[in-house]
Length: 208
Image (cartoon, rainbow, N blue to C red; front, side):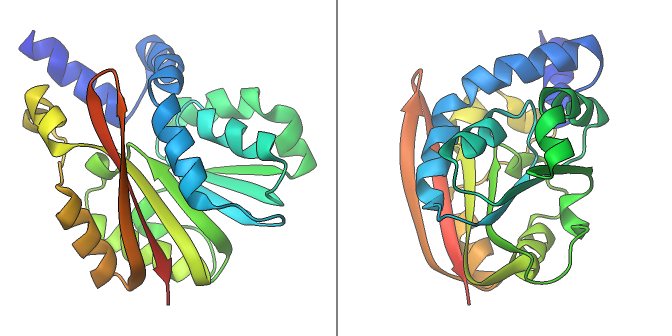
């Protein structure tokens, strides 16, 4: 059991191979409610350029497209297999320029300053090797007055699942809010939700 949990934790952080592709499909369903909460907290406006960090199987990208509001949706992902899945899934929209996806490290975003109106990310916080640096990068590429929204599962639940023992960096809400404040975000707030007895949070902040 311990060996499988370690394997699962590794796959959640970097999906690969046949198991990773199966996991991406499962995560699209499992993350659906968290994606919905993040989407509502983005408070989208027509013509926005949005960045998603760690798009996985593409469920949130699909939901963003269906709103009809963004001018462009850009994604960065560290898993080559997830990138390939979404290249296939969104081939037409990528060709049209509506979607643009990259293989990249969130700690060194390959974009110029003030490139986006919103940034969102769901269940990726645990895998950032340098969370403060990622938040600084998010602040850098956001237009002043723009919003970052982070969706993540509670520290209590992740510890109960023993995932903290296998490479997950787990955070209390207050820790996430403090990191965002130190990165230069203001108007920081957190809302919560539940899915199958699993509590999750959505913390947002606005660039100065």
